[in-house]
Amino acid sequence: MERFQESMHAHQEALKLDKNYAPAWYGIGNVLQVQQKLQEALDAYMRAIKCDAGFAKAWYGYGNVLSDLGRFAEALNAYEEVLRIVPGHIPALNSKASALYHLGHYQQALDAYDEALRIDPNTRVAWNGKGNVFYKLGDYAKALETYERALLLNPKMASAWHNKSLVLKQMRRHQEALAAAEEAIRLSPNDPDNWQRKEEALRQLRRHNDARIAEAEVLRLRAGQK
Image 1 (tube, rainbow, N blue to C red):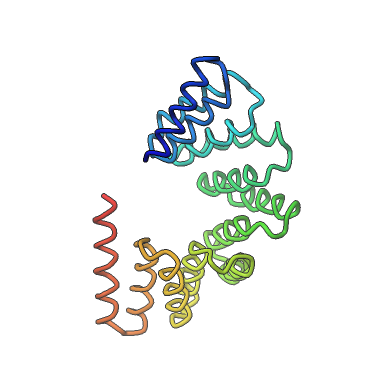
Image 2: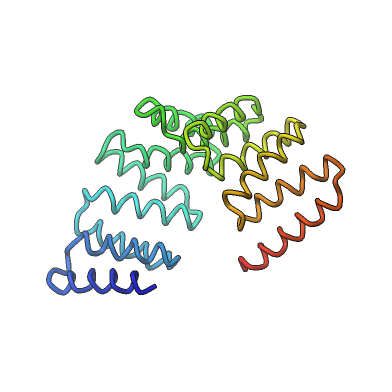
């Protein structure tokens, strides 16, 4: 908390010298976003953009906050602006693909992920995101293949282990789904979704006592998020 206060103070001091200093507004937006003060972060990023319309980092931060708020159509426009300023910006391509996914534009999402992967085939976020699109399309074999590609690049990617567990459940490979869920829990033990995947796999394996223990952990963690 002290670090955030120091950072905020430094940016505010910079604005006393120049109220139109875009990097200071951008820095304030970053601090507010981390603190989950999303509307205030949005306002700060917009101030940065008004000071410097070509500030790609500010557009990207603006898009990310819009995504956090579930305003995916607006976020998509922000990511498109980043890509206009910096063609081939891989984080913006991945975020654009994610926004398209949430808007239900699955083929366009795949195209955006593929564009990111053409630039850098080792973009693990793109492989994981591409798996989500295939999962949504019901192509579980391709989804599994892409999640595994993401895990080859980063075996500590908890979200990919979670997603692998989910798709293995759909493929009725419950023992493997359990193993993937347990790896996701090892990497991210406070994520209730990981415990839910474990509970589902245990129930399918008829390990009902263990499933009840996992279910209790899901409920405990979700209660803590409220």
